Length: 300
Image (cartoon, rainbow, N blue to C red; front, side):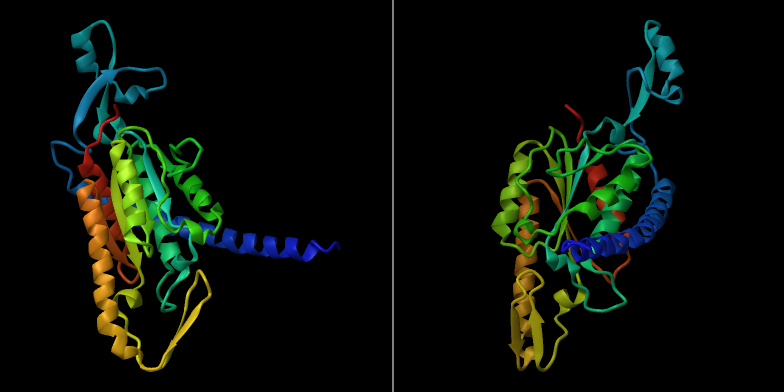
């Protein structure tokens, strides 16, 4: 065996471990999406949104089932198809923080922030693809995914992303006019980094959602006594003898940081959502899907 043999075996072992998680994550995403989809169907109403129809000329490849025969008969010279708001909109672009900080989970009963983010974005892809939407990765050169295989391809793309702690801040990416964006992260970066990325996207006409995913311990700071904290990105360690005395200052700092993120979203016409990993993912998914629907952005 060559010297690279052990490294190759290690890589294969990691790949097999990741592959073993893939079906479970996809099933979890599908289950969550089905739950939210059922709720959305039950509360559909007339007006803007999924049930708002417009007409456009028939194009080669459009399903025959979408042809509005009554509208086409009025025109006499061409066929028209029905199109809802989701189908008329530009693609949605998703981003998940690739840094190691998302690998934190304070209890074995809760998922890591990375797993929850990947499941939520895959579940969102399921809902969007069911509505005829195209879904891409923000900053990725590949064409957006579309159709039945879109969720699987999204999860594969997220799983293939390399860890990069230097890219913990949202990227300065460009998108087509009218795009919708979802950024999923704990956003443990300087607010100005987030502001810069969001402002650039908003300046090009994109709207979106900042989805902050946190572990309950990060929000509540339940620590007492002597505790050692280790940075997942730098491996730096800090030891405090009486951790409980830090709780007040920590919570104030955490709240101020979240307020800054909300302000960034608001001033750029975006939405801000906070989600904890000990809460049901369906709640976050419904809020995400509803926020994107309410943006009502149409392709130019």
